[in-house]
Amino acid sequence: MAAAEEDEEQRLQSALNRCLLSEFKLCVAGVLFGLPISMKFKTQYPWLIGGVVGTLADWRNGYYVTCVPQKEALEKFRVARERDGKSWVKRG
Image (tube, rainbow, N blue to C red; front, side):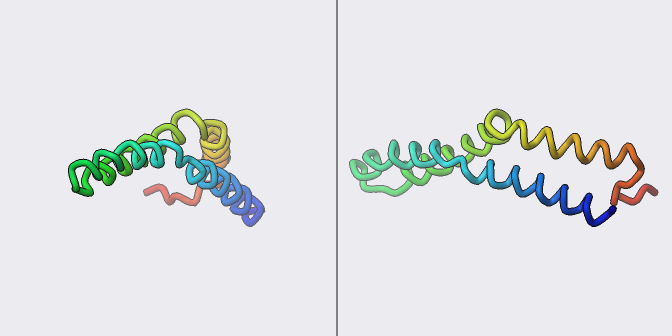
């Protein structure tokens, strides 16, 4: 039974990871926004900052908007497992 629960948790975690890693649009937009500014001022900082800001926005958007069903499924599974007393976390 424990192996099946571990497989289920890994499957849910994998689904959440795939969803979060599929978010890339804002990163690309940030780089594309910063690229002409970088070329005009002959410095790499604008496109670099645009890429970082876009990546952070993608993570936030994915975690709080796009991937909410996957996150909730994983949380429900973990709460149910802990409620049943089968948590892998040792209590002190």
